[in-house]
Length: 446
Image 1 (tube, one colour):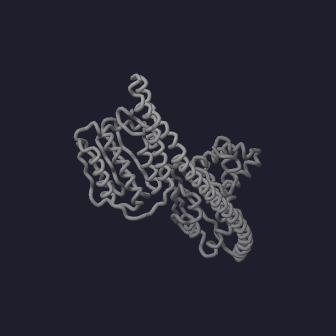
Image 2: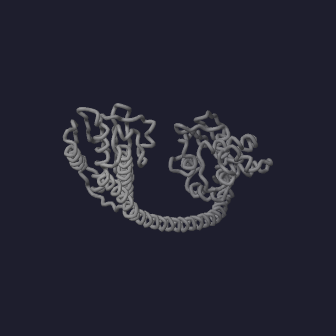
Image 3: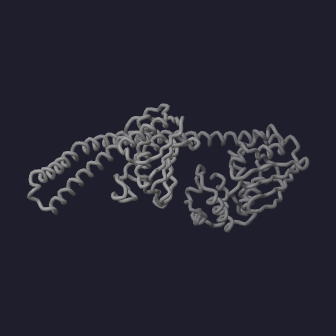
């Protein structure tokens, strides 16, 4: 935001504070005055509009020209002036990789020579960007002030502009004489010294930021290791301390039914049955939590994984468990991805198990595993669901159907999502009620 410094100085001379300029822009005055800060284009144009309410058109132009009066600007531009003419310098500044163009990456620029000292400077905003009047006025000052940066009279510039484009006609001053060349050499020495000092300060600041970032990385690594140790301890606690009371509850309830069943009325038996079912359900929840924890913590081994073979093996297990089901499953050949083989097998168990379960009420049901570009798609023609619930389906234990409609505890898709994210991939779904669902995943950036 070094670009705005002359504008703030001009506004201050008119009695307008930086806080007043920043009001309504979404940025603080400190952010706007920080030379290293970066703000969005809409915020930048709002700031310029704020300056336009305080400064006259000519003051905006002068502030734009003042941008090139800084020692750093002179140091950056003067080497080019020593080698090239003013015409070449304008053309050089408008190249896509040039400093002037880089400062305004939201615009495409070009320079056309119309005569010995006449140029046309065209600016076209990129798609999606528009410019306010104040932007074109400040730029007018920058264009007019290029010769001033070398101790020459300013250029004569006229322009026409819309919200998305502007065209500047430039009349360059004539250079001549030994004194002019001497001034240029003196200005280069002064500017170079000032620029070197500022670059040194910037380097010191960058080094300090690097050290702070390094310390932050080390702190986060230590916190991550501590959290990993706590998760391991918690998992061991869940596996041991929670299971023992559940086994006791389950065993006692079953013992009462076995030993005293003939003396218990139907209501008591039903209640004991509910106790047993709740204990079993709690055990399933604990198993699910442990599975989710292991997925997050287990070490990954990257290798080439045959997803087609993994899918066929999972489907064979599902057929064996429910041979009475009528399911027509199709798996494309040659689907191979880079990933952890064990986690990919678990991923296919979750997605195919989900498709198998929610297509239960179709006979025959259809399940396909196919390529979708760099991704893999698991599709079924089962129950589906409303896409308005999309944000919740990957949350652990969240169910969109009752246990009477479809069995399960709502952990499979949460595990699938964790596996995909651990591989740096994405998992997306397309579905509608009664029209099945298609889960598409990658195991890395697309």
